[in-house]
Length: 219
Image (cartoon, rainbow, N blue to C red; front, side, top):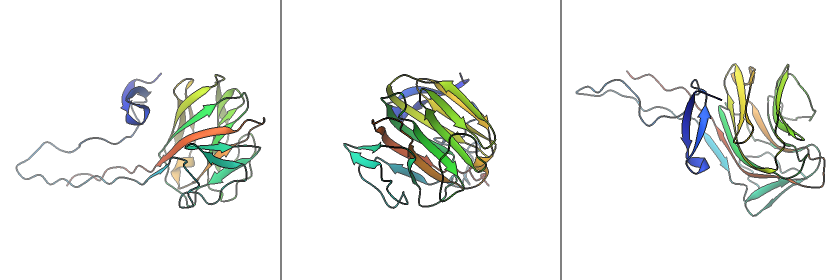
């Protein structure tokens, strides 16, 4: 649905469509070469990666009571079960992989200023939720929401993009949701988990948080 594309190494070299305004890393950048180049290295933001081999206290504040690890996956069982990052981050991208294998295992990621999140379904000031609500995929923004049907039980590769004025929620099967929202204007905590309605655990395979800063102009 977007006008530009990219090859994703994290998705085994598969193509992904992206908005042409998306900010991503480049191989090289700068002015035309001169006899004595005066380029300054481009700063890169922090990249936080969790393969979910076991609980990582350097990333997460505490392991939720419904969270267990097995075979390189995080399994989340029960209602209102999630973990919070230790610190706030200037989030620009979140990449993740999950398995939806029941109608309401309800995987969720939340960006919020709150250090002690009280889960609810719906819009809340200071929170933006990226979530499966049974067989529908939602962005619950701070003031309004948007959704699309996404009911197939399968593995999903997802990507959340955040700017100071908007968010988007991509997956490789049901497409992309976008929403105007200012949650990315300041650092936020990242929560990950599920609000599973059934006895089946919600499965996560990995999570990657990227803090992307704008390049410093060449002198």
